[in-house]
Length: 162
Image (cartoon, rainbow, N blue to C red; front, side, top):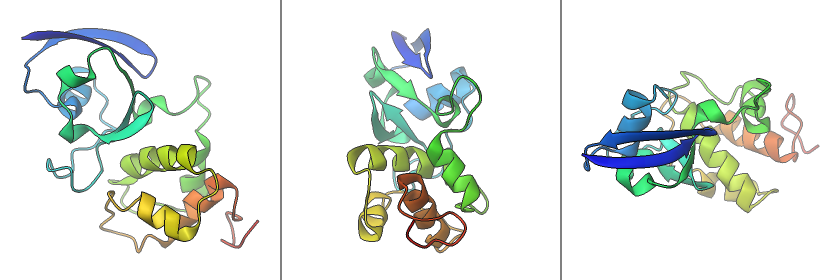
């Protein structure tokens, strides 16, 4: 067992973990952060995307021991302390950027990172920025529209430039 200490969603945590435990397993099984979804275990789908020290990572591709000393933000930690949804969460809700919801946490976490890097991305930049996150239900139209809305480049109701 290896002792790790990290900050998860603003809370300092410390645990003994198996050196081979994945970060996604640690978040879900030890901390109950079930919004971080296990979709493929091969880093292909992006459903398990979280922020590690402010950058999006696929948590099925990171060992928990590699996160030692880091700050992790999950979908549960994205909303404000007052319960107010993050602007990206709100945009996905307003633009119906989900269907079954399985990929949504990873899509939202990747979108936050994308918008931190490029606050006003083109449609092409959005599609490229989200290409590591798969949705099996939608045609991505409303997901792209939600990202545009969160960026302030479209109206939520019409998808037209704001």
